[in-house]
Length: 308
Image (cartoon, rainbow, N blue to C red; front, side, top):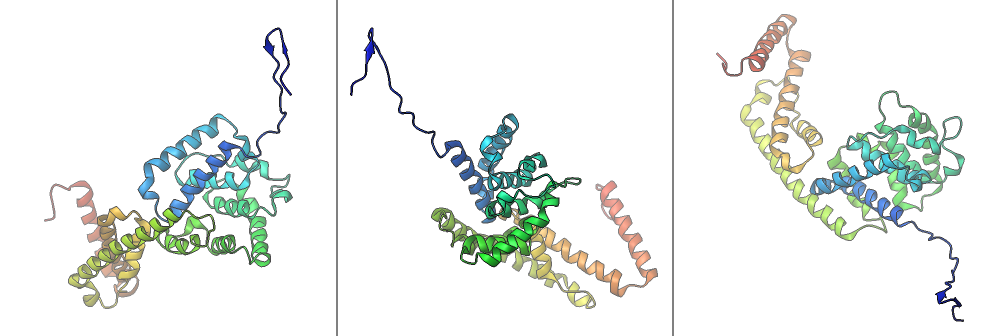
């Protein structure tokens, strides 16, 4: 049927369609923070530091200006964003979670089956500051709900592995490089994985592992030439452990020189610790401590004078 017109003005009809079922901003924002999380867990984020920082800065600024309605109803998105912002030292108030809590401080019963949201809330609860109790109070119930998920949903392979891994040890306490090796295998089982990112993760891991092997060979040669392990046979020979500690402390591949120095420091500290705990007498240790303190004073306050 044609459109009626009155005095040359066309009267337009309306289809009275319902609003779109999917918010574009919601999809794009959620995909973005999920991508950042994936890059971090695969230890690829150092390749995209500028892009990640820009994205999180925009997210933080936008959240301060508006309430971002879609996140108020999405525990998964809110918890994931909270964790990422806290990891990058952005100020995020714990009160963003109060809308998900009931009057006694527990998760609302309507969220008991939102296991992706509960998992990310659990992970976020380990980035609390002193005095923040909103998530800490809710964590006990969250753990019980996640344990129930493990018992009742063994067929949800990808999410099941993430939950089981998190309850064993939260992400915030794990060594990034070891986490990347584990997550590569898990991410392969994700039906929504990005194949390009997956291939990049495998390639990057092998390259970085080769770099670490070179660092370890260097440390091994240094330790053998130094001869402390032979001369101080009472001390623990823990070169590998000390090297892995440096890998955990200095995670970016390009900082190999710093890792090598840190490995040396760790090894020397281990020997000195055994001198105090196992070998030295009280009188010897008092003299040794005095010498160390005087050397430290020279290094800190008279660096140009050198050692005499």
